Every structure is written in structure tokens, then in C-alpha cells.
Length: 109
Length: 117
Image 1 (cartoon, rainbow over the protein chains, first blue to last red):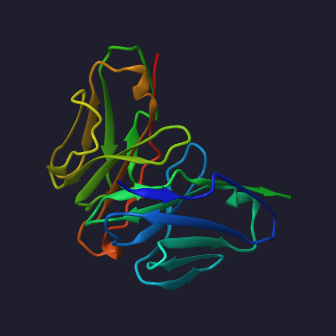
Image 2: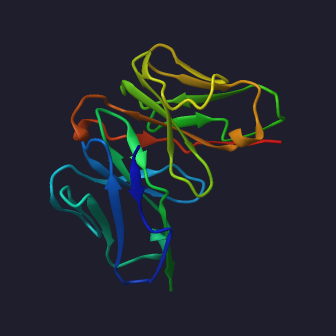
């Protein structure tokens, strides 16, 4: 089966940086995705990595190391609206995503 | 439409009743997915459609669950004889289809929250 681990909760201060780690053990690998989900809303796509290295998109960056089965999502200059759940997902074949349980990030003033 | 649309947003039913959940994908997206999200757990894959065909139904938890897709667009997930353990948020996603990860980003609807009493 697939095993995708990420911390359950993280708390940070407005303006700070938070790094959400994700480790995975899957039968195959065809991309790692990060989604943001506010309570009661649809998960929204943030980033994907298919090759090793860092992908930067404004305040959000995502890193992948395939040899280590490891990724992180870096949120910079935190804003109150960044309080949400962040979902790590691995595409292990042609289409299906396997998700971690999500990390709830709380941003405090 | 502009995004994935699901209805109803909330459904309360009695144990033993049948329910139908609807998903309207993004126009032009050939691939459609159903997931289930239970409290404290990750999204659980249920079924995948490419066009009107479902090549992967492996995630359906029992034969009480079925899904269909018509016209390569709208999909309906049906749960027969609902049980309390079916209570969850049912999420639908769609994507352009294709093998490259860049072509297959899944876009989600807001889900249907099902409560079985």
C-alpha cells in the first residue's frame, strides 16, 4: 500500500516562515502535489514536483527529493488567510493520487 | 463551468436509505475522480472515469457504492442502503487527462457532506 506521512498540526506567527514536511513510500512515483484546503471548501492546487529540486511560486515553494522519498512545502511571509489544511499527495501511476492526512496550519497574529 | 460543481452541498439521510451525489466537472475535462474524506484521514480514492468508462473502481468500499458518468460530463455516485460509517465528505475532481503530471492536475469541487443518522 501507499504510506504518506505529514505532521498533523503546525502553528506559526504572521509574517514568519513555516515548512511542512511530507515523506512517502509508494509503489511508483509520477509526481508529488500539494493542495490547500480551507475548512468546508474545495482543495485547491498549489504546486507539483516531478523532478528533484525546488519549485518556487510567489510566497510558496515546494521541494522534492525522490531518492529520499521526501518533500516539503515552504510558506513564506505568512498571512492570516494561510490558516488552512495542507495536503500532500503522490501520483503513483497514470492518474490516481494517494493523499496524506493533511497538516493543519494555524497562523497567529 | 468555471470549476467543479457538486450537489447537494449537504445531505442528511436515515440509515438504510439510498442517496445520489452529483458532480459536474470542468468543461472539457475527460478524467473524473471521486474521493471520500473522513475526519482526521486523508482523501481516499473511490473511482476514476476516463470519458464514460471507469477503468478503476478499486476504491469503492462495497457493492453498495456505484457510480456512472454520462456524455463524458456529469457523474453520479450512488450509495444504497446507507450505513453510519458512510458519513463523510465526498469530493469530486476532474482533470484534462493524459499521462504527464502537468496535464493531469486534479481540480476539486467543494464536496458533499453526507450525514447518515
